[in-house]
Image 1 (tube, rainbow, N blue to C red):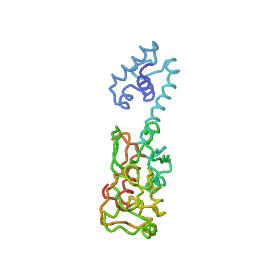
Image 2 (tube, one colour; image 1 turned 135 degrees about the vertical axis):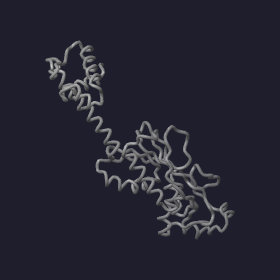
Image 3 (cartoon, one colour; image 1 turned 90 degrees about the vertical axis):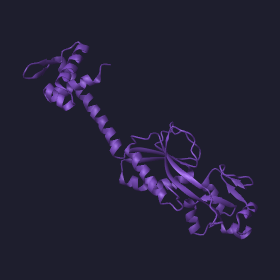
Length: 284
């Protein structure tokens, strides 16, 4: 295919009325504009313009070609506008992947964003399995824990404080541990990534572990932010509150470091603010 720029220069020259005016519009020299049109005429073997010292006149072939070139310019401008909109105004579909336990956090963080930008749509994939981010066309993936090596860009959101919890009914039946050494005698609810030797229940779903903990089935290490509502209503109590547990890094990963569209930028800002305000957020 011939160089599309040559057609654009031809259409802009006709619209401007002269090569010098077209040169100013295009940021080119008049000589470069003239050479572009001559190159197009040479490639096609057709004369497009009659040139005189006073004006340019379209040939019959030029008249037939011009509407197609104008549509080409219109399409290019529309493409440019769409890219500018993606850069400056959140719109289109925002695809986010997150573990099951983080669904509520995504909803709380992005509700104001979706209210402020009605042209923005959210597609939230909630799954504890590691989905293929490229195949799923993910814009932002929320990850908890240590990240595997990846070409994606990691953007830290928070270090969630992990606390040890139990239901009051469990404490009534088994007693409240007074020292860390007492924990060995208790039932444990654990995730596969935790040391779980002797654990009574193992699940890769933190929400499920918390629900089982609230039912009095054992002790569980839970994110303070997730356990806070249950602690407030008395469904859970803290065990050994003076003993520091590990923390859980929460990270947003994105395909690129620069050139994020507006929908990704505003979503990342909203997620940072939300996680920074959570109970037990140690850092952001």
